[in-house]
Length: 106
Image (cartoon, rainbow, N blue to C red; front, side, top):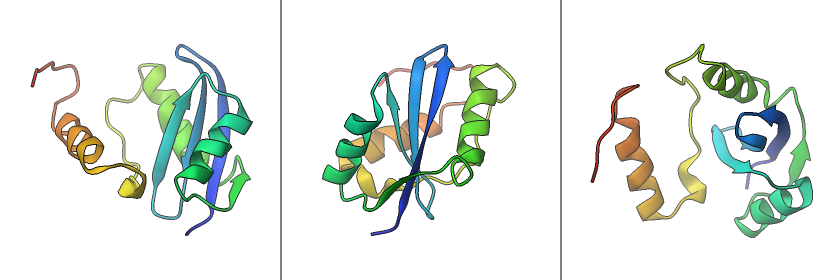
């Protein structure tokens, strides 16, 4: 498995966020957790080793902060789909097709 890099994004409108990235892309986002719990979750899903690194997570952190500030409407981050089950991946792919500002149901 690839190295997984993590960092904390404190004080967002969604409280503290933790993000994880691999060489493939953004792998996970967690809300209101501490580092130990987030790292444990990643470990259970096969992410090893897990290293705190603000440089390796900078692009993801920047785009998330821009989105939360209302400055970004579209992400250019690649995603690492390996940590999702089939249903999760299909649900996320469906939401990616919804234009910014639009709502839909399923």
